[in-house]
Image 1 (cartoon, rainbow, N blue to C red):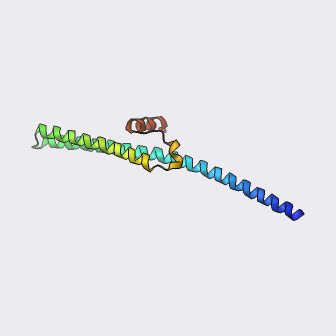
Image 2 (cartoon, helix red, strand yellow):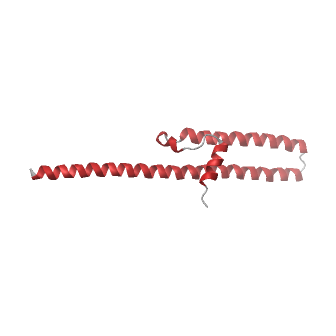
Image 3 (cartoon, helix red, strand yellow):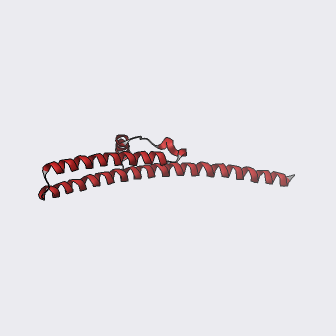
Length: 124
């Protein structure tokens, strides 16, 4: 009878330990996903801002060269359209590929909401 008692205590301890482990791992994974989401959003924004700065340098270089003002304006319009499409595609792709079990942690659906999310979670 005493062996059954010890086996039962071991089984209860093992079940409780397994449940605790699951809850702890789930919480750690959710925290990790929040941090990765913030880092990825910052990276996407940083790359976008860097490409805009590079385009400005390109336009300044073209002004100094032999390129006409109309050609530069046309190139600027084309580059702005490409940048806008690229940023919307990146945010959309991030949302589509986000793990289904953690979708509730995603607080944005477009570029402006992502910028608000970055401002809200910015660490000082």
